[in-house]
Each structure stands twice: as C-alpha cells, then as structure tokens.
Length: 320
Ligand SMILES: NC(=O)c1ccc[n+]([C@@H]2O[C@H](COP(=O)([O-])OP(=O)(O)OC[C@H]3O[C@@H](n4cnc5c(N)ncnc54)[C@H](OP(=O)(O)O)[C@@H]3O)[C@@H](O)[C@H]2O)c1
Image 1 (cartoon, helix red, strand yellow):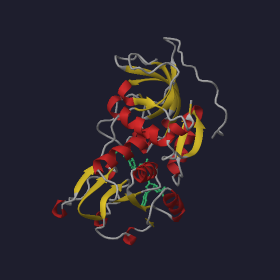
Image 2 (cartoon, rainbow, N blue to C red):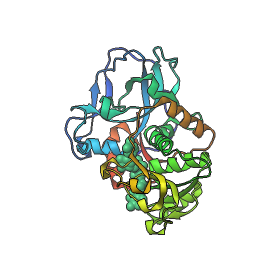
Image 3 (tube, rainbow, N blue to C red):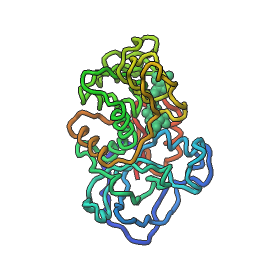
C-alpha cells in the first residue's frame, strides 16, 4: 500500500507504437491470476479520446470478472480489466477535449472488452467528462461507476423533493453516493446499513433514521427504495411506490405489481452527461468521495486481496 503523496507530473503526450502497461488476466481465479503485462497501444476510432490513466478504483464487478463469476457475456481472454478511470487527455480527437485536461470516465468493460487498467485507454468521447477540480485524481477515480450507478438508479426511481427514500446499503460505495445525491436533491432519506460502525457515516451524510436491522423500518412507508445489496426489504415500500435493486447477482425483485409497486434491476450505462453532473456535485461540496486505501500498479494482487477482506469505509484505489 502506498501513502498519498505528491504525484509525479503526468505526461499528456505519447510515443506512438510503444507498448503500454496493462493489468490483464488470461484465466479466471484468485487475485494471483492478475498480471502486469505489456500491451499494444489503443488505436482510437472516430469520436474517441485517448487518456493517460492516473488512477482507477476496484469495483465488485472487477472482482467477479476476475473470478469468472459473470459467465455468459464475459469478454474473451486474455482481457484488460477495469471500469473506472481518472486521468489526463492525450488526444482529444474531434471531441473538444484538449490534451492535458483532467478527466474521468467509465468504460463498460463487460460489453466492450475495453478495460481501463492500462496506461493509455481509448474511449468514446460521450463516456468522458471533466474531472472535479476540488479533489485529486485518486479521489476522482472512486466516482465514475459507483456515481453513475447511484445517479441513474435515482433517476429511474424519479424521487422528488419531499418524497421519502430508503437506501439499503447506504454506507457502501454506491449507497453512500446515492444518499448524498438524494439529499442534494432535497429528498428525505432513511438508511439501512450492515453494522453499527456505519451508522455515524449515514447520519453524517444526511440520513434521518439509520437502521442496522430491517425490522426497525416502518412498513409500507417509503415512496422509493434503492437496494444496493439485494436486501429485498419489499415490506418497506409504500403501495404504488418504486423499488430498484442493483444487485444483479441476487436476481429479480419479487413481483410487487399487486400492490402497484414498479420494480427494476438497474444496469449502469456509460454516460458522460451523468459524469458531468457528478463532477458539479463534487465541486459544489455536495458529494464527498472516500478513499479507503491506495495501492500502486505493481500491488494489484494485494489491492484485490484487501478488497476481498471487506469492511471497507471508502474505495480501494490504484495509481499508475
Ligand atoms: N447493476 C449495476 O449496474 C451495478 C453497478 C454497481 C454495483 N453493482 C452491485 O451493487 C452491489 C453494491 O456495490 P458497491 O460498489 O456499493 O459495494 P459495497 O461498497 O461493498 O457496498 C455494499 C454495501 O452493502 C452493505 N451490506 C451488505 N450486506 C448488508 C446487509 N445484510 N444489511 C445492510 N447492509 C449490507 C455493505 O456493508 P459491509 O461493508 O458491512 O459489507 C456495504 O456497505 C454489488 O453487488 C455490485 O456488484 C451493480
């Protein structure tokens, strides 16, 4: 693990043709299948931007992909992993982004096979946005996937100011951002968390009631429920309300149509406009980003081992 310190200057140029470093797997398994390899430079297509990666973060999907738990739809091996990226534009193409700009991006690695854990990454311009100015690129690397999931799911739930929202898993990466975004929108938020150590975080970020036991939640009282871990606390949602899960692995939300409740299992999408909104929230001070610990690229196996241990308060970031 490395301490946060003064980062070396990051080059916004590249020597065409020379290989880049990338974190790849050529088989599925425990963290020791992760290796640092030399890979060809990406060739940008039309409307694509080339970015030099400064930092990334580990998401549950990276862990599941490495294990081979995704199954159908996994990109072919060998593959470069990674969805999150914070870095510096090297070639903005026709996007309007200029070389040297600080940016964030999310790559839907499972559908495109384009992982962000490489020195240089080419991504569609519409998946890229300006990075927040108020935080470091290491902190910014915690934002793209978790933030877009929070934002897009809140948009599906269409909760308006004055309505009541329950966030289950409100101290997690997605839940913690969903809680803060909802509060910034004037929504009343209660929280379900897994342990006493998370109660102060949820209160401190604007939650009203914070429960560690779902039986403490008032029945049929929430206009909307945002479920980040497959809690399926369906008794908490009001008749006629909305219930969104993001826990794909837990399967569909039970059918609540008899009570007039709309349900979904939401899937995150690449979304530069959404990233711009998240950047504005960070720069306004409405969204606080949490780094649990930072590892160097050579420590990627140790970073995954720490991720697997759980009990995190913030995200694990990796610097290039
Ligand atoms: N569908 C999509 O597009 C999408 C996008 C992003 C994430 N996801 C999925 O969403 C889930 C959450 O992602 P994340 O990055 O936010 O993970 P995370 O940071 O690990 O957050 C999960 C949170 O849920 C809490 N939790 C787990 N079991 C609980 C329980 N029984 N009661 C109360 N809280 C509980 C965890 O607490 P502890 O720390 O105590 O375990 C943690 O705070 C993952 O399964 C991920 O794969 C899906």
